[in-house]
Length: 168
Image (cartoon, rainbow, N blue to C red; front, side):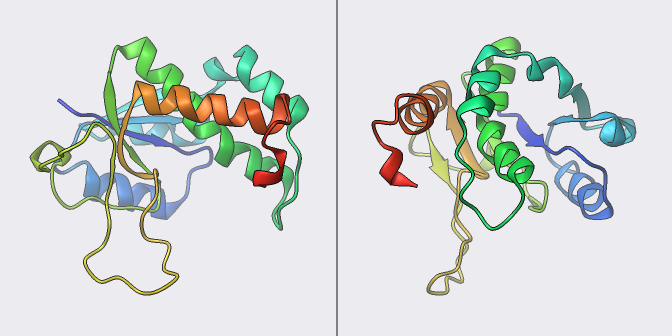
């Protein structure tokens, strides 16, 4: 079974809609704060408190070294970068070699276990593709533990070791 993993901090209506639609055909692990715990009442959702991951040494180190260069607030960018580290720790804890990462504003209409994945990592790409359309990302795709390790290595090389700081 390939689980859906959604990391989302604050409750809002689009998250509820996404859970209702995606949860019709998929098992969802929702990692978030207290405000999203109410969605645990959905039969396909298992809520996990995000606080348990805030104590991770890797997260603390990245928070201390993170260089904020974006147009949004620092907290937002930190959350975006840290989601993959949180999902990686979640996968280790629950012993999932692979999982399907789903951003909270995506809705999956079919069971991801019915996808014909040909690789251990795969992103979904919409059939209707527009130039410069950001429809494909790791926030709608199959992720394995090796990808998570590589992602953490890259973050380390950018923000900690500064070997690849010019990537940003």
